[in-house]
Image 1 (cartoon, helix red, strand yellow):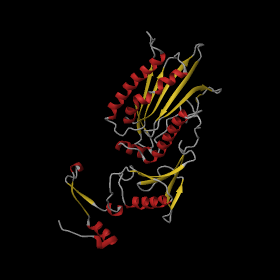
Image 2 (cartoon, one colour):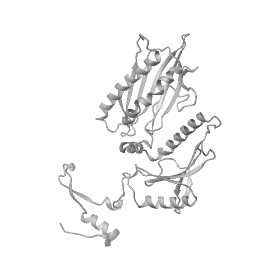
Image 3 (cartoon, rainbow, N blue to C red):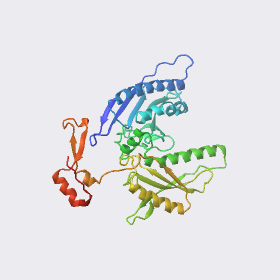
Length: 362
């Protein structure tokens, strides 16, 4: 187990757990597939127990990663490996999420009846905490002698990447996502991904029961209403995390099995990671025109409430002028008696808004 800290950002620290599995000879009636399930579950339980212990000391560790490697070749089919790993998240998903494990790799070298060896790797990602992505790769040695990953089936993120690719640092949205997870909710810009996943699952169920339906490639179109320079609403394609206040809205164009030609719905969500997930006048000034405009078009509105209540505060240019009368200057944790303005700062505030100041001798 390693604790890694990014050089550019000391707040980006995570645990990397590397485990080697040395398979023993199988005895009795146990199959290789059953052995894989049993051994991975046993090792994963031990890894998560160890992570739980060290997480008590390193509270800010996030985006933790687990790598498990079966050292020896296993005489097992690719289909058996798929079946063995299929229930991996169901068995361990809750603990993985609680311990901020967002990525796992399982490497197995398959050996067929003729003795040919094919190393494969399963990469499991769950960045948002709710949408799990499985990608399978085979290790291929190129003519230049380098080993790369080649996707099996749909192309994954690491298709044709070197097998020893560097792990990416924490993305810009992860700190906000981490705040939301600590509170026990979802980061605002992960909701479209959740909806897309739910739509896909609904279509899979529908096509299974009705052969006349065909799974569409694009099930969801997202537009984000924003206020322009004239405070007028405009629907744009905006990158996640660019909101400047604690409320976000979308116009979702959904293609469901019941309405394959699409229908629209408006979703308004609080940003739990903005200013301690509070609600202020600027959020109201945004949500009201969005609701009024889009409801006039006859679109249904869904409001996802994730906030801590009303935001009451001071103007930031005034807040920085206040001083604090500590109970003990050497020990701030003992609290303070009151906030006050020095004579110099008092004059600065008086210049800004003299009529709003009331003074009292203490």
